[in-house]
Length: 535
Image 1: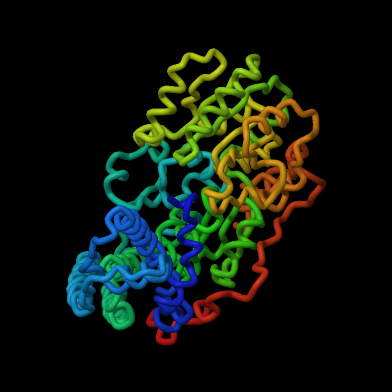
Image 2: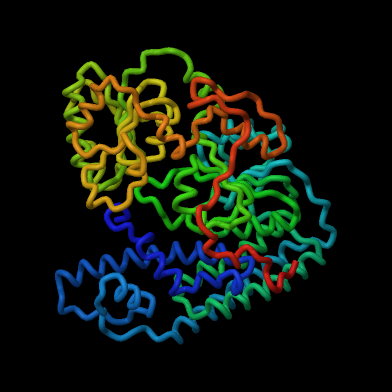
């Protein structure tokens, strides 16, 4: 849906006006960024409903749809220029439901504070680095790269279930669940006062919103207190966040700053199916690491806080030793095909089939996420293709990045790996068979990558012209600096290496420049202190 509609970007002005994002800093204070993030997520779900209704009414034009709230009806009117008709859900129902949600959230948070209060709370333990745990193959070398030592790192689980299962990469390390903080009696009383003020403020300003919006917003009160308790028990100089998709990261940053800590975040994927996506529109970290300058400066920077440093570091998918290994000569003649769920999967398969026949001496590695195979529109045609028994087409089930050591060419339907391949000196192409239907593809902003026909793909593979890598230096960082060294310097740790010559587009010195917005900040008041902050 996102590829065909670009619905979030095209509806953003309406959403910002409808929910008065412009004044969210004045109304919501410390919750402003998290409020906008939560609303953007909730609104996107509503847009999906709107498109489904539009399709239904196209087949059944006499259908009358009633019981929808003002948000759905006003959005439908704006998006399609026609009224849904039918009666609206009365606003008092939203108020009643949201008052109930506020009461239950307040009582739960109050009880939780009481449970976590300790009359003789021990002094907090200090760690140089705390890391938000996400199961990922890069965890081990990330911790080794940006931590002073294993004893100086605290692994923070978001919930108890993965903590009970105890992943192998955490064994032997300090670890905790985010809910296991505590309060002294005095701090507990302050937290109670804080949660009274927060619940009252959010209900006052957001109580009329639809319940699915409000439940995301009011839940932030508990999340804030949870992080306050965590940082009472564990003080950390830096926190490495992996949850930019979730609004509560903004409240963690607020509470971390109270304790003098610094919040780091990382854009773990380049938005590839559309330039602007709702999950990344509203963020709050002290330093946010991105792959390159272009997307941040052109599409995002004016919506992010002025105070947030945005630093391009390129790909973080390879370890330091793997980045160095890329310099070693070797026969990399394979073709990596990174597939994903898309409306053009049939055309993509046809193209790969034709390419494999055209270049029988080259192996085409088909790589995709296992979970995508459960989607019938993707899994069925891909399985049928792999079942054809084409000798030089094989399924690759290993780590995607391993293909960079076997291949010199990459094809994809738009993925972060397409840009990372360019950074790491591979030729990379994105199938763009229907440019009119695929509304927003950021790879079109630069030349030589998007291809609309298999004939173009064949010509490019046969061409002896060098790939225009130098034109992509703004899209993804190509200084040759190991990304971990940039982060280490931001943590006042020494870099371990200079720029890697085989990856550097041009000679450079250590140190990264920050991304800057080309326009005025969209929410300037969101960077001002809360008018009645209660510490």
